[in-house]
Image 1 (cartoon, rainbow, N blue to C red):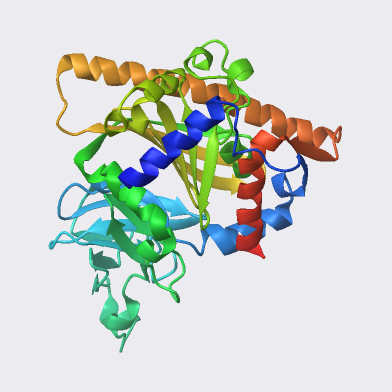
Image 2: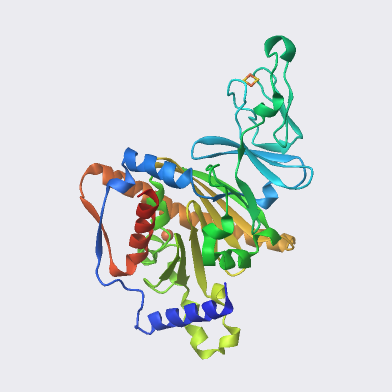
Length: 378
Ligand code: FES
Ligand SMILES: [Fe+2]
């Protein structure tokens, strides 16, 4: 992030601690419940958000060398990512052009050609059809150039691999990010490596899981056994950049900056910075590493999460490995508390006990996020 923005954010947060809070909404807010369980709203979210907007689907290191590939799913569609001989990343539907079998079943590997497991049609890793068993007999006159793998818009940017399912609009990651791109670039993901990844299948709507990370009201109670003492009670700020959010959750040590020269202020030493890059990617930036949370909505009340800790690529000592391992475990322990609460909320919603949820004046980020989703599916 820009240095001037960093100083401004710290000023805001010190102001919050001095009881001149700029981050209180005028009113508290009531939110209706349908967005958290309606199959119709979920279908619209999938169509207008997950299947239309650029999103991060992998760290660049997931395709470490020419001919590396990986398979994944985006909005329920099977996707194949390849890195070609020239090092460029390409994306295709992982679907055979003969009779639509899944082309590649493995999760990752290194291949320069892919043979469909059903009848053996074969493509190279830039999507050209290069083999059809019994072609002359079965498919006389077949023009192979019309049967390449179906490409998808894909771009490698800021150390991440981005994909869109919207072939008509292509992909413009910088445009999608707007001004928040400077923060993403400053994280320098390309010089980091993934230390560990864990996957969770959570019985909760994806919106509830995002909301769980963008307020500090719950820290003192929900996280009383681990992080609560690191943070002042119920203190956070949130700024939106188009559909993206930057939430700052200051630590108790932030107050000490008031007595230090501004040139020495470094926000990430005294706060957790949580970015919500719309849709589907959250980054929890801490002093010397960050955590990437990839949210994959599977149904109105069902979400897969992949939690990855990224650490500087140069720091490989045994002592550092142990330090990262502890950090990763601590983060996962804390997030698992949030996920349990999200599942509890989802079943609470289904009970019919409430007609609305209530967001306090200091929980305004949740309302902001819900309006972003509303706008995206309008
Ligand atoms: S479905 Fe792939 S070769 Fe037949
Ligand atoms: Fe939490």
